[in-house]
Image (cartoon, rainbow, N blue to C red):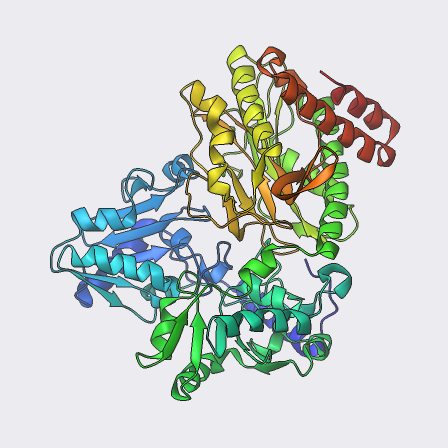
Length: 621
């Protein structure tokens, strides 16, 4: 992902790590054996349960191999979920994106799959956890706010939480991979648009405004954004696993494994950032407390271990990570970069859709084949550094699994009569992309066309929304669902999530979902627009573009106090799936304008046969 020349010491370390991973090791991958070992630990320590969330000590969504504890224990490969293991019961809690996937991946003779929409972890504990019991958890894997909620749930059962360190799974997992050691490299000013000194001053002002002396930074994307650095410690997300402390005078400390540091990175960080060994972080927290510093920490993103390390006497200021909002509001350089990245991405996706048009109906293309072809087209683009998440490539019933990931066992051949859903994205030095298209292979059914058109109507409703400043994504969410609700159907995932700039494809704080607790949308924020419909065991539909929030233009001029969206993604939407009579005039105008822009911006970069095909599939309806 980084494409950097390694120094000799780091190169040797990585080679030794590679060789160690090739050595035969004792494997303990059977869920039944792993579950038995963990229950033995519970009995030995007089514990009644243990929680295993799918995250790491940095509260990441995507994690390195060493932190895949939930997957190791249960077989569930999704990016969000929690297991609760007790002496006589084991549960895996997942949200609506993963209910079908979890049922297929998890051995339900060992684990009960619980849908979070029906009962949350806390609600289940309040109703079912043993009275006067002890619920163990790893304080590095739960935020303080999550622990507070769990504590309340336990108290309702006259039970208690028991922080446990080290994590017992790390003792049982015999062939657990080591933490990663990817090199840390600078992210050039031509892509970031703001140097690290300016960013430190900007965020330090937020620390002062919060009444604090320092802020503890634990989110890897916040740290990489602040210091204009990138890494490859996490697949699909160009971050380095590290902690940081930012002082109100804008000086900073970075706690990172020094073996990751290239000479170029040291020079880049300069005198603004003091480099410390990752292992020094706990002692530095204790020193801040001992010095009487007012310490800003985000209880929603920092682990409970951070607060325990600071100690009970620490002067803690509970405020949001000072980088989160600044990172979400892209500057002009970042916005120009993401538009350029989306142009290249649109070229690749259009070439892929044309390839599918020619080949998919022959009944010889599999889901994995299609994903590989798409990645091949993308990899030819300038500044390409890899995918932004595992491609969701699902045909027929697999398309109904919201975050489906094809493997050799599940891999289906795409056949005439199928709906094929592909949700994919890439990491470019100048931007991160995420796009979903659903296409028909052969003739679709009337129901498929009805559902697709309803999803499209919801997509257009978001894309054309105009709203006053201060509006949150939650206040817009019903626009995406109205047409589906009219038919008595819905989708069980959010409508939109924030997206980073050569960072995480899922970025906060902005989002569009049923929850009204999201922050106000602001100009410069990038957010996805992805309503869908999923018919279990039959097909799935999703249409996703990325949008950027801009100031609204009304009657040819900017309208102060109002905002709207500008669509970034450039790729045709399958018109053969649209019931034209279901679209009103405004919706048809949007689709025709969008397709006109797709053709105008992409055609000059395409071979003649693809260009002719694109002109046909983007012609007005």
